Image 1 (tube, rainbow, N blue to C red):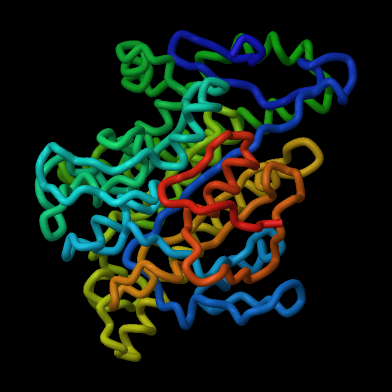
Image 2 (cartoon, one colour):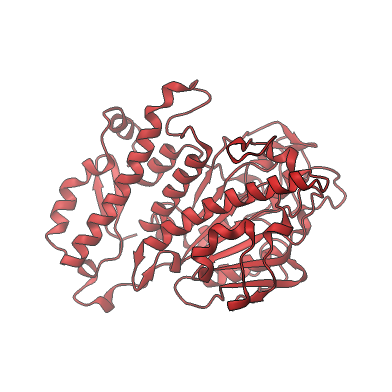
Length: 436
């Protein structure tokens, strides 16, 4: 932390992007851009027939209809088939696949079947990384969601609601609560940590940048022309996200307070985009290098009437091979990949070093259920996007089919290695997945 530079004010703390002017007299003195790692979860499985591309790589690789929104990033992604999560299966515990799916997704561990306080799972891959590299950033990790997680009660066939509403686990009995309000997530990154000062700033409708303005002006005098432009773009991007959140707050009186807390947009799509904006900012400002985001809780029965989908997502996922329901599932799948494309575009548009923020980020996107009708946890829908920390080591623009029975956690073990995180195993991993 002593090597990092900040703009600081009474109620703000903003770390700076890499700048030649701050590092020394030559560009070579600028440290290599750090690697980032993000996990994005979708519920209820997918329509695998419309999801999977045809086998092949490079020119033979063609994205499926459900993944078509990702075409602009085709050269930066790979679709991975054949990965399993054995610990999400019942293994003698009976029903409860939705709870086990979210609990197992990042841990690779069998969640203890209980609706009480004696929960037990395992440490998740993001927290394994946070333990080793989290000290380099303001936040060791960032957890986001679009739902307010329930902290007690039974949600799925005798499993605690905690399992179903969390994918990140600090240890076997401690889930990492996710922020679901964009304002709260924004303040977690840029707030001073002084609750009263931050609350006063918000009450007075003051921008984060109002409190670091003088420091920014002083810093401008020390920067090269190129770095002054970079700083201006950097601060502008922070303000743009802040304005979006403020606009959402202006509409809060249209909703009951308990239904629409401050900062939550009145559209599900805008809510997702707001959280992705915050995640991108967290990476861009190097406020954290590890993040996870549940786009919806596992078993979500959210309606997508705006897509022409009749009924809730969970209900439709039990399609019983109905062509109409399968078509609607594919529409929902495409909606979610559109949101992923929005996030990838944010990373791609952010220049960093000789490339982009996307080049220095690895994004795992997928579900812990393959086909929602069968509640299976094999051949999971998984996408890996990004450049492997700018090392150009991860193969992309391909559909990679892993050997049958390969644990998803083998992928995680490989990603940890690229993050320079030492780990012998993640959950039920059996070795590293060949990404190169």
